[in-house]
Length: 264
Length: 265
Image (cartoon, rainbow over all chains, first blue to last red; front, top):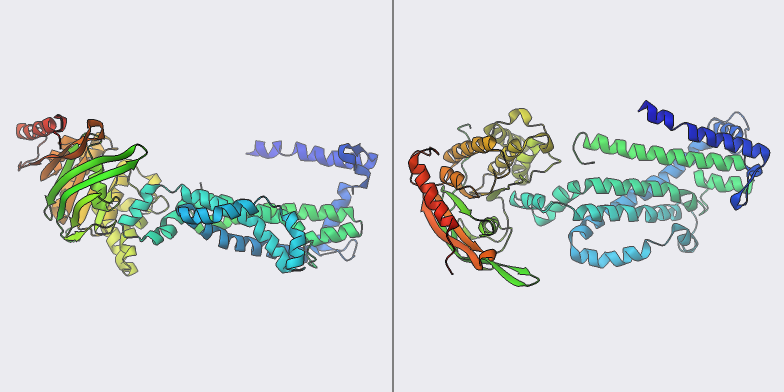
């Protein structure tokens, strides 16, 4: 355990070192990356502190992190919750009933490859700018992994358990809730984790829809005022938030399930 | 086993010219045909036969998991149209819900009947005690041995107070010692509950040890003849000592029937 933690350190440290030296020497990398335009890692750390606690730059971005984070988290959670509320029941029904699968599978596979980026212009025209548009894009992105995970879990429910529930007096519909849902739980949880991760990935894009606050909208604002340090700060904050929310989701499942063997 | 164990509602079983055909890509295959059998309330009937003779199919039809292609299937005077809590099934692979504890598995049936919570718990605890698993009530199935899991499965169906207990090679996956323990226990449970039992097994000795009557089935797709009942052998031994010569005589009689070439139907 300690060994794996220690082994995780050298590569990120080398990366920071490379970043620092490359910025000072103004290296030019493939793809036309001009490292001279990067902020110094140290400056990013200072900006991150100021973004969180203020007291250094005292500009429009000081202490803004918590406002941005709560606005972004609210959008991610709303979109994710909505995607779960639609994806899990639909996935269970699609996984168990051939007719439902035949009805919905084509349209799901048709819409799934459309990247959220491609939705942005249409969403801007259809919904306009604001929270609704942002949450719509997040819901859309998180929906697919959740519904697909649920379908695959619902299909793999052992027939024996359905028979057991039926002979103990469960109605056919009742088995969906009492057998299919718990038996599919590991796949559903996996789908939800992927969905939540995607929700954070789509967040920045979803906040190009002109919402006033949020980690994503701050990144775009920082670009407009050429503050590369703040752009990187925003990226770091999203990375941490995405990572922590995955841990948090697992923690919630552990608290709800306790030692019940529902997650493999 | 405690004396206060619930007595199952009594029901007799009536099968009249029952047949079952399965659809396969190569056409319909008749797995079982012309099966007629009457079982009285409280009777313990074992069904033996070689693999593919249709004994499990027969049990699954009684459970309501499969529909008979033809014939009459009645339990307690009512036709069987699907699975239901009146007919409890014990599977060879237990079929316990892995995400529920022993107590929750046993309470599953009573809870579906919308009984008050205290009553559900009381029933579950009583049947867990009846199979000697009180200490393990809070464990999950994966934490138990195969024999213990099968005890839970038996307690689970008994807690549902079935009128008919259907057992599909329930001890087939267990080691010999556990198997003989559970046979003794099942015999005692049957003596106390007088629930009608249909018990499918590969083991002739097990059948003769447990049953009032042994139904011998032969045939099956591989014999070119649909599975059918070749004979029903009453076991009239007062003492079921498996080493006694009289016990062996019954065993031998049944073994000869099982291995005899199936007659044309």
